Image (cartoon, rainbow, N blue to C red):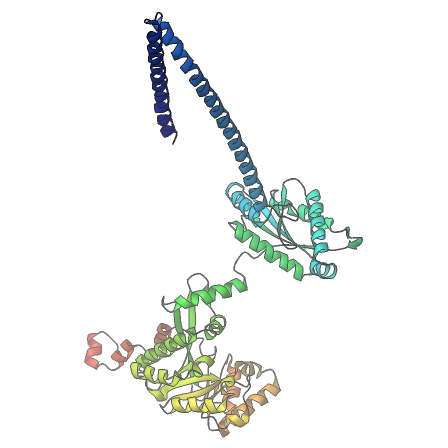
Length: 538
């Protein structure tokens, strides 16, 4: 644009010069012609032309200079206005940046500034501490005196804290009645800082003529031990602060558990469970079920295990309830049923009499498609239906009409049913008599107390007698010593499982301990000549 303006100025100047010369020349010719007509001749023609040119040029140049001066003045004024606008923009940007990084009520650096400063400190500092402060009983003050008084109280607290904190610390307002102190003092001096903070609240605060007493709960996290970044340090300081509140408030609490706490672990489990099936993290262990009278192996109960790549072995008690709250339990349940049926079907080559017990969740049991799922799994795995036992809990039998329908559909395939953890749920004995079940499993809590608590032995005997009268088999869970096994056997309980016999173990261990591998079966069926050729004792 500047070059265009300069290109436009030069032609205008040339036009002006040409116009002055042309007009002065024209005027000179006219005047000389007039003089010649009167006098016949004109002397000093050159002088006359010069004077006329001067008369034309001077006004034109005067106007040009005046316009140039005005243009220069306007330009100077525009430059001054531009500089003033630039100053105003700079001041506005500074104000906006300050407001964005500071709390409007207290003037303290805010949460945004806190995280920015913490991220910088983690890059340059070897150690520092983050203290999360929460005012105890502030809600009562706010609700009683109103929000305006609450704001004045917060402002008084911020002023007193700022005046009291030692050098090397910075105060931030995190929001509401929460403050954060960033201490750049050595971490082993943090007790001195907390003592100063707690002493701030020993004297009351006066708001509208009312003396207000409060205390502060302080949570402390430290870099680098409690976290590598701002988010982790603030989070753990908050957790420690809430722990201080639960202990009564008015105290400081150092965060001492940087590992995953229970809530974080549950959230992690719920998220990772969705990929566990696809990444072969789920496995099955099998616990032997023994015939108590003879010691013969009756079968196995399939128990799911989750080997998490980072959390290690996750208990079914932690992830099964999560799966039941979502549709995942249907997929997991089907995987367990099919995998277990395939595995025990292989072992049937060595022992066709083995039974398999599989737990069924309440969500699976109430799914209208469940009987069809069982039918399909039996067909795909070629597992004999009469060798399969589905274990349900007492709570699943509350709606006895629907329960009888589902159990009836599946039992028509030849599958057996067992009531798991019997005696700990909500079953009605009147309903129990009408449900088509095949096994009752005595809960481990009864088994554990049999040898030391005589009334418990009587209760177990009552359950056994009731089961025999209902013509169902009894399976005792949690047998851990010989005395328990003997009491159960004498009482008439037919089957049992527990650590006395074996804890749940992986299939390869089962095959080794019980001789159920396909290789073992092929060897047992081999002829003497084949065994001799393979250098196997006959």
